[in-house]
Length: 110
Image (cartoon, rainbow, N blue to C red; front, side, top):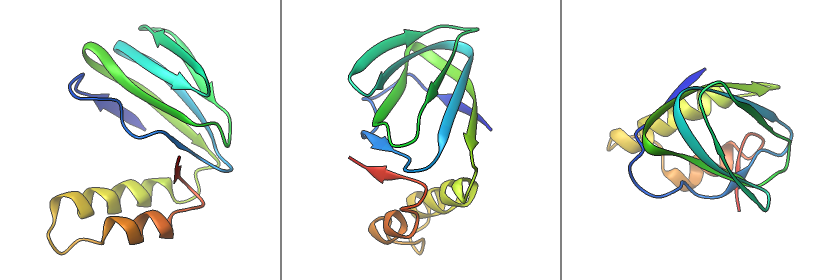
């Protein structure tokens, strides 16, 4: 997947993926990450991984950023983001709490 970040607003909530490894390649801009207890900035051309079960959060700094993002194994990650989008933009979308519970294999909030 490719993800775009606006560079506006606070870091998203701390979360982890119980059985998935995430790999990120910074394509444009710069990202601030908190992975476990370590804060770090990543620039264009740099990559990083988040091991399963590791609490993390990240956001663009100094303007917009774009990253390539791989989740292994994929499980239902794509479906989670599709349903999360529906929950956020549609009044008749699923309740956020129920959605988070349904996708506990993919993501948990710390």
